[in-house]
Length: 134
Image (cartoon, rainbow, N blue to C red; front, side, top):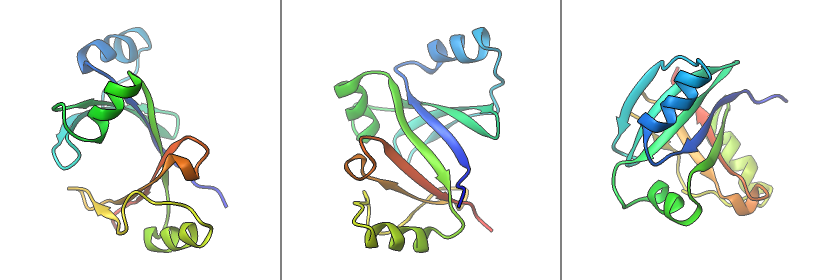
């Protein structure tokens, strides 16, 4: 089985400063910049190969991304993989002993269902699974 990468998320303190590197120095296009209030972040998306880089900035000092930034500083936050059926993927992971961050899939404003796999279960890497809306 091959799971495509949807995105690699990088936590930053300033989107403008990060874009000075990723957009201006590397020459990547910004395809989207938006607030994601349900996650408490602002995101800039830049295409890369078959996926994208998401630069993620916390909107406040509260929430998981803000805590990550305070504790670990800027850098790789998570890798997101695309799955066909999020519920089946969650069941398979639980059966294998993996710890999920939430018991049920979350739903983004675009209808994408997603769940995070705790880093303890993925050898120190926070993984996100996406099921794209049909």
